[in-house]
Structures are given as C-alpha cells and as structure tokens.
Image 1 (cartoon, rainbow, N blue to C red):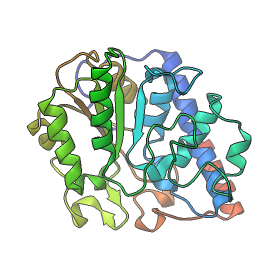
Image 2 (image 1 turned 30 degrees about the horizontal axis):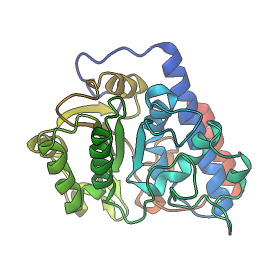
Image 3 (image 1 turned 120 degrees about the vertical axis):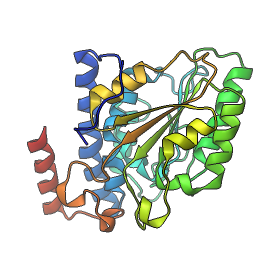
Length: 288
C-alpha cells in the first residue's frame, strides 16, 4: 500500500495534525482490542482498515464542538456501522460521554452496541444495521443542511467497499450528483474484502472511481494508511459550497496492523483470548 503513487497537488499536513491523527489511530486499534475483549466477539479487521481515516477525521478535520448536538456541526455517517467500536473511544475522549461507558461495551443496558444507536450515544449521527443505507442518509443530511442555510456544514459518509454492491448506494450517488451536493463527501474504505471473501471474487465493485465519476462526482484515490495522503486529501477538498460531491477512495488492508489478520477472511468477526490480545498490543507497539 505504501508504494501507491499519491495524487498530485495534495496539501502538505503540518506535523501537529500528523501526530494527532497517528495518536488517535493508535487509540482506535488498541481500544478496539480492549473493548472486543469485553464483548467476547467483534470486528477487529473492519476497524483496523480505517483507523488512519478515523484519526484524520477526529484529529481536526471534522467541525465539532463540546456540545455533540450543535446544529451546524459536521456529520459523520458510519455506513459500515459494524466498526463503531473504533469510534466510541474517540467520542469518549471528546467528552461526549463518560469513559466508564466503554467498560460496559455491549453489556446488558449499555448504550454502546456492536452497531451504533444515535438515540443513545452522543456524537453518533446515524443508527446503522444492515449495510448500504448510509450514503442515502448522508444525501438527505446534505440536502437538509443546504435548505437550512448552514454554509459550513459538511456531511461525511464512511462506506465499506463490499456494500457498494447495494443498488441503493448508486441511487444515492446519482441523486447527489444531480443536485450538486458539494457539502457531501463519501470515503470508501477500500479494504479489499467483505464477509464472504475478496470483493472482486464475490461481486466486483470496480471501477469505483469510474462509477462515481459517471454520476457527477469528483474522485481522488489515496493510500488510506498513509496519513500524509489521508489528511492531505481531506484538507484539499473544495469549499462546502462547491457544485459537485466528493469521493475519496482510500486503498487499505483489512486487519491492518496485526499480521495474521490482514486480508484474512476468517477474522471478519472474531475474539482474541487475553494472551493473544496482549501479543496483538505488543505487535502494534513494535510497528509504531
């Protein structure tokens, strides 16, 4: 992945942004291991592939505030909602809910489930379940922000690559292009795999770039684990008032960071025993 040619003319992030995004990506991976250990089952690999993306988004790109209900905030729609376990620690760190909630992850009565519930978790903008719906919801949010005359509000939808097989995704893409929703950004976590195996063997999703461009989107392709490219692509987005929606196709590795999980079909859902979790944490530390 690291030998991918970066897009031309990306802004150069400053060291503060790079450091903060890297720190948060590390938090995402380590806390995912800890929280899945509480649940005894979870989606490590789907989180690990987008850890750098989450680090960049919450490291300074998203316009958020101390109040998670601020009306003019940016929205993040987790269309691939099964990776919510990686977002909860970032929301807790922002002070949106007490750290103690994390210790009860998925326990009876906990607000924090395997998929997020926007009615119960401050800072969550979309209640997910079955995949494929997030871009449609994001189109609705982007349209609403425009109607409410919120000129700075941006809607970001984080999509998995295998969910691009849902026809609803392409209806939403067509709608966004038709109405010129320049306040909408789709980030495709192109981690190469879904539950049933490699995307191109199960049901091809390529050409992702060409498909979005055909519906009137502007598209960039980046290495989703190279923080300079991830942050640069976000900072290089046109103003919210632009006349075309934006798509960032982030080439990633499912399970990135833990060698035996990378591109492994058997680790879409799993559990690490305590000694294996400790070994995984050590591996992450050695790679820093």
